[in-house]
Image (cartoon, rainbow over all chains, first blue to last red; front, side, top):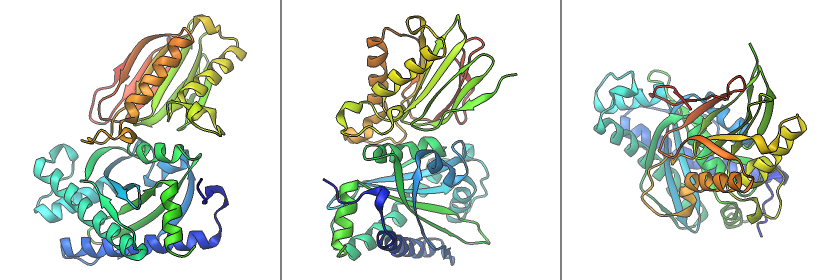
Length: 205
Length: 161
């Protein structure tokens, strides 16, 4: 039986989860920054309990075209990690890395897609590495899977996981960006409810 | 012109002519549209999970194929539809990410479609059209005027079933 009741989370829980988001996303942002050789700022992460309808609104509505890169997690922490990029940001990142000037996903070739997938892999890895160090828990990440589609459809995958334990989704959402090149992305950590307990108790909660 | 009524994730709703129903960005979830052609009453549900009996607490029946479709039929009957005359069209149940593993968690789209078909068959409701599976998201619109289901997907032509 899980100890964490999503409807009864107190401020302490939120603080701890926010801090995880902070450190994880901080590391990921550094990784991305090194990859593209540009300074990137990170916003203060948000920890939110959202209804399934609110969930798809976080990235501009259910029909908004986004890039989702998903890794599954196994080991002492189970669940998923998703990295989402809005269309424009995805183009900017690929253009920056590949030296192109793409403005439409139709123009993406196989190399561009794998570049984007690899970006997702590297920065999700950085996020997970810091989570693992912080909690002293072993996390095995899968290869990255990518989908470019409607936000609602992409978010249905994590939403369904949350649907198994309740009617809300708990998000640790971190946003980062750089004004000149406009890279806005979101990390969404989706541990199973049992894994939340494991994470919290590893931190002495 | 009627209104377009939105059905959210893990939600359901019904309407009468001239109104229409829509649900946006179906991924691995399944959209089910039920229709009574004589009364021009439509119902739609956005199913997230296959089976409510696997869960101890079911706070939102609309989340599951079995309990949700049950409630939807009841609501349509309350509105004057004949449960025996209903037909169904279904869409969604995609596998959004090309997972290579056989992990059950990741095959949820297929399982949702299968569960929806099972419960509809148990209720004696015929599926007259479907657009399910594959690997892309869908937005659907259901018109009570003629029972047409419109399916929109990114970079694809609109499909009418």
